[in-house]
Length: 517
Image 1 (cartoon, rainbow, N blue to C red):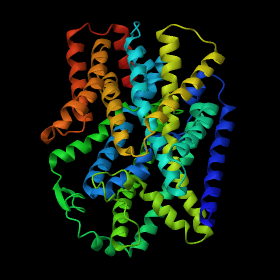
Image 2: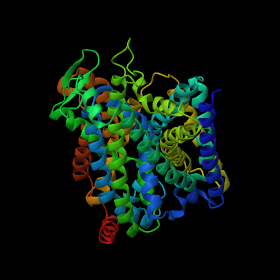
Image 3: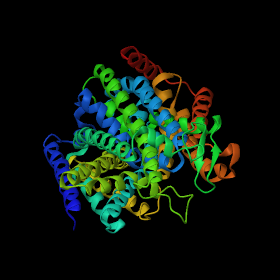
């Protein structure tokens, strides 16, 4: 083992031990199921903001987005980032406060439970649907995180991809099952800081190594469309492909997904006081602008480094249409940094820890949400099986482990694309929960029948559009979130208007929460 690898391993081990320690300490404040799933609603504004954004910015922040920019240029990654920035701000502005007040008034600790109580659905259909969709889309989402860990250690140390993925999953499960939501939130806060430090250091290193910003721009001129917001570089043909208004709208629609992300919405529900959400929104908005902006620029700088000969190419010669290898850009850069001296190796270890942070911060939150869906929403409420506090905690932890196992199986193929996996799961949550969440918070005429119709139609449309419509190409090549979101909104409105209006008690509670917000 080389000195550089030893330095990296030391930094990573210190980081992982710190995360496990946080989980152990947090377990002392986790006394019941409500604490396990929502941290007792006692998160401060800083932890709320940064843990929400860290749980949002999964491995696609440090691997997916830079890889996409490296592969095809500024347009695809840039417009996606723009959509995410706008979506983040609007979600904090429109959803956070009202959801916090509503869930406290209804005493709801999960998203499906909120919908059940919001619409007085005694049949538990909404509850069961919500829990089922959480499981359907969280398993592949969690798989993307495990895949990132596998690629990370496989690229760094040449170890077996599957083995690295399993070890990473075990560590994430370890601190999450111990401390629950509080551990996930506290570690996410720390991880957001590590992620930020990793991004900025690698970016500055890349710019200096490439010869400065002027050299970066000069080296990329030979790639037609690479620095154009209305074109992308085609690696197969060496020419520019048009990136028109339709394509921009498609990628910008990523922002719609925020309104339906259970692991982010839970942070809104867990804040100490709704009045503190204004500060949280400002912190989160600033952080997401800087982090996504740096991620896009990093991919561009990385391609310039390759062109200037100071970095190996990450475009597979025998498969130029594949962007999977490009997602290892930050790993390759960290490895290069570690070769300078032992101090740089320790810094490279921190960068790798940043990649782990981006993965772990999302995976732990997803596992908590999936666990609550099974233990609370399906077993206890849908099937009516009453569990003691101890049994409920045990069930939650067993569910968490089971979801992780399925995630590992989905990510077993080392050639799977992190960005592709995340985009599908993102569309699923955005279409199933996003329209239902917006309408439940802002339209008092919405009822349980419309919500059920919207959730089902949104979820089904994601599959139909991705696998049947989108492959037709041309104008049909639209990101599945946009059409699915629109269909769900229409179904909620139409079905709600055609069915019985909500009773007076539901309307009064809606008006009370609206005044509070």
